Image (cartoon, rainbow, N blue to C red; front, side):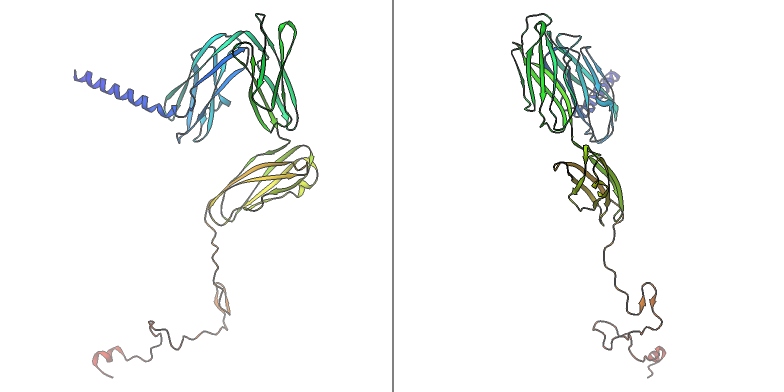
Length: 379
């Protein structure tokens, strides 16, 4: 009986320890559930569950599995190992081309380092079989900054009799319209404004079909007219007083000159002498001279060109670490001496002061009686 009680106690402790131990893994996932809502058949439907390593140790995601074929999970960019502070994502793709109706899935994320743990994520949605989007999303691809673009997809009603009653975009840079097409279908046209800034586009245009609004994914990337690589220049760790030089590549869509890079100072210098000739690509040496004391440098810099005042931005980062440079002034050598070699042969030696300050023993006290005479009491 005692053995049975002891075994039960140990099992309870281990179960509690496991439940408590997996709590650290769940804290890396700020979102664990997502509702896709109502979506069209064949529409591209994807959600990314963000992951942030806040454990202070390396985390390795061993695998992700699903409870339903209606959802395909994956690890974004294949990044299974996350260093402390790094971010990643678990991607859930709703398989709308092969499933219909109300669907849901549980995604189990398995972590094997720094210790074993499992985290469960869930998705759900309703796939309409009577509305189809082909292709499954609006894809702009790469669009140059300052350039307008337009793409379109087909909306059909396989069962017949469907009708689109409205369309809207919540992004002012995207304009959406629908036009009737043959066989009772429609053409959805999405226009990207030329004022769209550089960066990625991931939005939804909403279609109204008499029931719930149906989202259509819009993706693309607006590329900057002036690109800088790397846009985060890592200069590494530099000892005080030393220099390090790295390079940045500045590229435009037409030949240009670089007028200046600001702000100056902070130990950073830029050689733009070769960038005074118009080119589409400029390679700029960036030199950092470390100051006398340890510390960190993080500076945002602007590159000004002659392309109508067009500018680009990048950051420079460095760490100053090592023996600090001593800036204290050294005493000048005395007249007639050579530093480190002492007095010159013909230099005159200074005499001690005639009246030394009070509190100091006289270094020339005059004649002294022999010690033996003192002991014998003789003068």
